Image (cartoon, rainbow, N blue to C red; front, side, top):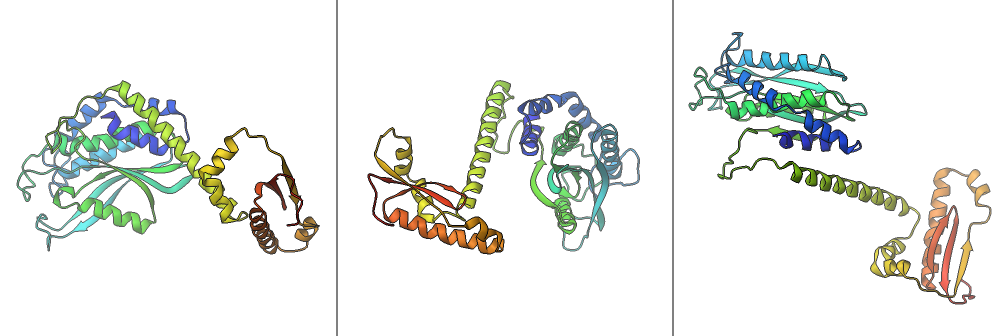
Length: 348
C-alpha cells in the first residue's frame, strides 16, 4: 500500500531533492494508522451522498466533518501554510437516474501550498461516499471498508506524511462525494479548479487501494522491498536521464539561433561522432575569422539589430566553410574557429 500512493507521489513532488528523503517518506507511512482510519470511516453506517447530514454519529454529514477535523488536526503541527475547506457542487434529480433528490455534493479539500509554484497543483483524491446494492437506498448501512474507505484513508495518510515536508508545487488532498451516483464529485471539483485557474500537473486517485484481487481475478502479490529498492534506483536514474536530455534540448535550441541547421544535422550523425572519437593525426589548417570592430558596432546599435547581424554573418560563413569541406570547431563571441584538412590556402 505504501508504494501505491506514496512512492509515486514523492517522486513527482521532490525530483530535485535527495533519494534518502523518498525513503524517509515511505518509511513514515503507518499501517496501524491506515487500519484505524478505515475502521473509523466504517462506523458511520450509511455513507451515501444523500444520507443523513445532520447526525453527529451517522451518515454522510458526520463522515465529512470527521475527515475535515482530521485534516485540521494533522496540519496544526505541520511546517506548511495550509487551508482546509468544503467545496460543494449542486446535483439535481432531473435527468440523473442515480440521484434520489436534489442536493449539494460536498467535498473536503485540503491545500498545501508550494514554495516556488503555488498555482501548480498535484491532486490526491479518495472517495468519501459508499452505497448499498440498491442505488436509491441511502438509509441501509454500507460500510465500504475497501470501496472506498481504503482510498480515503490513503489521502489522509499521505497528508500526515507529506505535510512535514516542503515542496515546490502545491498539493491538494481531497475527499470526493457523489462518486457512486455518476462521478459528480470529480466533475464538480474539475469545474472549481478551472474557475479558480489551477494549473494541474498530476492527479493520483485512490480507488479501492485495499484490494488484493483485481477485476480480472489477478491476486496482487505482497511487496518485495528489495525489488522496490531496485525499481526506485532505476526510476531515479531514468529521471536524471530525462533531466539531462531536456537540458541538451534547451542548449540545442539556443544553438540554433547562431548555427546553420546543416551544421547541427551533421553534428547529430554517426560520421561526426566517429570522427571526434577517433585518434587520427592529420595535417590541417586552422582559420580564425571575425567581424572587424564588432564591439564598437554592437555598442552603437540596438540588441535586436546586433543579433540579426551576427546571425546573418554566422549563416553565411558556415555555408562557405562547409562548402570548402571545412569543419566548425567553435564560436567565440563574433569569431569562428574552423579547421580544414591539409594545407588550405585558397580564398574563401
